[in-house]
Length: 483
Image 1 (cartoon, one colour):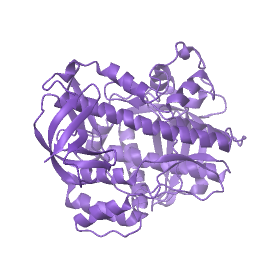
Image 2 (image 1 turned 60 degrees about the horizontal axis):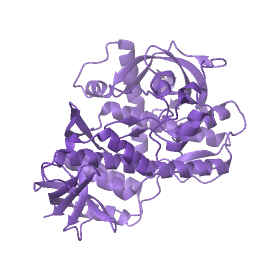
Image 3 (image 1 turned 90 degrees about the vertical axis):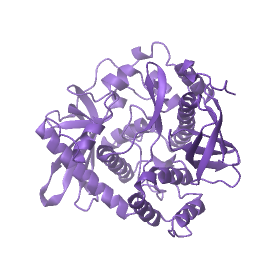
């Protein structure tokens, strides 16, 4: 497989990424001339002008495909009005247009660690439909009233188009450090006061979800670090207070939009995570750690167990989280008719959840945006139930393929990094155990590979020591022998 001791850094990693996309059914190349097919002028008639409000965003320092901005207002009686503006991608990408057809093919922006393959032309996703600072942009506002106990006043939820201006593009690490009292606040005091208010809303929403049994998981993935075109390390991006803030607000907005469509009598595409099929293994992992979980899936009990483990063993909590995530299984998109019982999201402990907050990089969000705009205008539902069912199935299938692409490219990067370390021993954790193979992720570097020797009896969550026996950077193969 590997020319042992060979230099994987000599490979063209972008070419490998294109090949992996193609092998998994994606189209890595946008059609020529597609940028000439979307509207030249942004329609602004009939929208609320909210540019005066102190909108801001929090994102990665190098992100340009900005999907959301936020602003809040404290109300009498302790409630807070939270307004989340989502980029109005539909305004420039009408249904069945050439851009929409391409977006529907891939269904998502694909992040390979060495190159980004956008769902939309970059002229849109990083410019005209991106909520960049100090420019006017169209958004669809989700306006929510959050009570002191973290519950939403569903009757007060509003969805409407608006014209906004992002007054500050903030960065996760800097805002997180400030909120955790380890760094300075934003220079603009108005924006700083807004972030404090947003954080208060996020904490209310989070506390309310956890009381219902939401799972506190730290799902982190390794990303390659490059220097002069060479992979020199793999690092994990850990959560901080700012990332949690945005995550909590987006979960709240996704729940509010789902309920809004349901109350309007519209069908929608819901994001669901069913009760885990491998609950028995989760119970076993808890037993090994001295805890007892019910025989049947129980989100609140699992939530309490995870909270206890985060407190007891914070250094290994990410590894436990990874095991639980694998055992919970992937989410899926499904049709939800307004009158049907809700399937719900096991991990978030919510019954109503529709992806709506990232239309620049997720196709289901663009579909939801079109449904929301039609419902807000009291127009006919733009998609039939059969169409939504087909779109949901396609998006689920493509999401599974996208995970495979991203997993393969992480393995390519890891194989490049480890190609000179054949024979070295590492500590890790088992992340997969099926008839097709057993897989382990190392603690350092956080590389994942297949256990090809000594794998018998190993299961997800088991700690293991392995020896690196082979790599194939071209294919992203890493082989371990369990010691």
